Length: 398
View: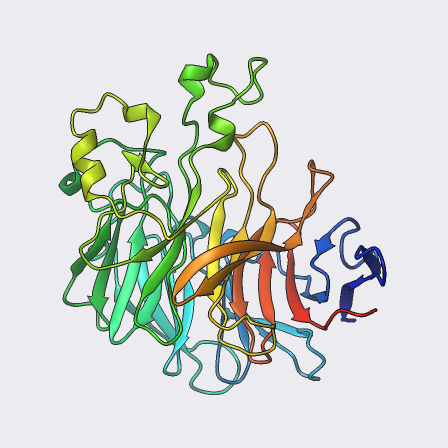
């Protein structure tokens, strides 16, 4: 497959990006920050979702709709993945095979009712040893409905996984369900512990470089304000002045024993209007840990990765966030790869790096997951455009 490139350069006087691209390769209208190059490195996988790299640079991609994990190899070293073969297949698509992480020679992967690990022991490129660590009787699931994604993190001998809200904003006592929580287990599946609670739908957990801090982005609540706005339908004639802008998506530093507000408190200590008369609203507010950063409402911040390299100027320690874009705002928002700027371990700003929303309306892609490649570039998946992209800093040109 030929390398597919979109390059934006800074013009000499007007500071306006000019675009050079092959329209058949990168969708026309995709915006890229000045000084960066966007390349399609894989375009044969249907709905690529979450990704992980092994020590040899093999890229593993979960494909929920087909119940498989694919292994992608760059055999000629040109930066694109010419070889795509099944590593794991035959899983029920309804099991929502999602989170993947490579650790100590094993590919760990998460499904709705299981966390397992797999290894290729005979060198044929396909997993021939698969071990289930946690099964349906071990994982907290509640109803197998609603937000069924399962985050996965292996860190310091523990497995961390999030079990999302079974609905949009389920009002129930905190201890009434094992959902809306992050749980941890020993790597052999024993020693189940509650880690954090009050979390709506965090699809990926990561560790901030140089620390043991666990971070994640959390999807915001839908429809907050619809009842006040007069109609429970999108794009109503009266407009959605509340719903369109509330509540924000969150970037959270998850700490053991902390509560993060869902479903009663959203954003930076804002009451969820659905529960404005809840008898325990202030009790929950006093318990809540506010987000480290907030992003646009309904941007559907889906995944993040912390940058550990030195190829992006002043990038070390910043977070890149894949924003899929939402559905229940009158104007589209998200559909981008963004960068959250960090200083002294805390975020202070946000930049859009790649924008897939053309003219504010046409969706050209939906970033789903992002990871750092060994060469210091950023890889991210698009499960609508069926592509995997690479973002590389090339420098601004006069």
